[in-house]
Image (tube, rainbow, N blue to C red; front, top):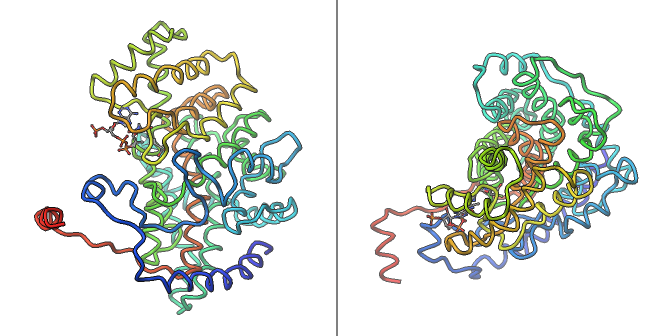
Length: 433
Ligand code: FCX
C-alpha cells in the first residue's frame, strides 16, 4: 500500500527528530495558572499534535495548509469538485499533498473493507428506536472491536515500534465502514428502514452522500467539503483529546474512536450543530416562518441569553475570530443556495449576534464557529433530521483522530496521566505561589 510505504519511510526520521525534543526534557515550556486548572485547562500547552494547528486569529491549518489552500491543492474527482476527503487523510498522516494516483490507491484500499457485517446491523437493530444516533454510532464502532488487528497483534507480543502498523490497518478498516454505519443509522431511523447499497464507482465522500439517499452532485460536493472541514482541530478539543487519552492506554482504534464520539455528542462540542439549526428554525417559527429582521433577531438573541442559555454555534475555546470553517460553508451557500430563506437568516444572525455577545460581555469569542453554518446546508439538501447531524461530524472527525493516534503509536508516546491534587492542596499551592 502506497500510504504504508510513505509512512514507513517517514517514521524513522520523525523518531529521530523527537529525540531532539526529548533532550530538552528539563526545559520549561509554559506556566500554569490557578485559573487555567479550574477553568478547563484553557490555553495550557500540554499536548503535542502535528496533524493540525489552530491559531486563535487565523483558524485551522492542516499540516500548515489553510482551508482555501487545501481546497485548491488536494486532488479532486472532477475539476470543479471539492477535493477527496481521503486526500486530506493522506495529508494529515504524511504532511504531503498527495497525487491523484495516491488518493485513488487509498480509495481502492478502503473499498476492500467497505461492507457492513451482519453482527453490526444486529447490534444497531437491537437498540431501542429512540436511541440517539450518536449513541448508535458509538455502539456500532465499539462492537467492531473484536476485529481489531492491534489487539490481535498485541496479544501475539508485537513490539512497541511495530504498533503504528496495526493502528493504521484498524483505522482503514474502521474509516471505510463509518459512512456505511452512519447511512444505515440514518435510513433505519428516518427513512423507513429502506437502505441504499454502496456505489463502487463513487469515492468515499460521494458514496456517503449516495447512501444517505440524496442523489444530487451538489450534495456529494457538500459532503466532501463537510468531511474535510470537520476532520481535525488540533488535539485539545474534547473528541480528539478523548481519542488520544484512550489510545494512550494502548486501547485500540475502535475503543478510542467510540469514546471520542461520546465526547463529540455533547452540546458544547459537536452536538452544537443540531442545537444551532434548532435555534435558527425556532427563531423563524417565532416570526411565522419568515426570515426575521435584524432587530427581531437581536431581541430573540437577548431572550436566549437572558433565559440563561448559550447561543449555539457562537463562541469558541480557542478561536477569537470567525471560524474559517464557517466561512468555507458560507461560500458554498453563496454559490449554491444564495436565496434560501434559512441561509439568509443565518447571514443576518452573523450580522447581529457577535454584537449582542460583545454587549453581553461574557463570551471571549463572539464570532461563529463551524456549527453555526453546517445545519442549513444539510437542511437545504433534504437532510432535515437534526439529531443526525453530529454523526456526520463524527465520520469526519474520525479522520483527524485516527491520523493523530497512528502517530501517537509511531512516536511511542506514553500513557497520559496528569497529576491531580485535592481542592485544599490546590488552594494552598496557589496561596503560596
Ligand atoms: N452564548 C452565550 N454565552 C456564551 C457563549 C455563547 N455562544 N459562548 C460562551 N459563553 C459564555 C460561557 O458560557 C461562559 O459563561 P459562564 O462564565 O457563565 O460559564 C462565558 O461566556 C465564558 O466562556 P468562554 O471562555 O468564552 O468559552 P469557553 O471556552 O468556556 O466555551 C464554548 C467555549 C464553545 C463551549 C462556548 O463558547 C459555547 O458554549 N458556545 C455555544 C456552543 C457551541 O457552539 N459549541 C461548539 C463549539 C465548537 F465549534 C465545536 O466543538 O464544535
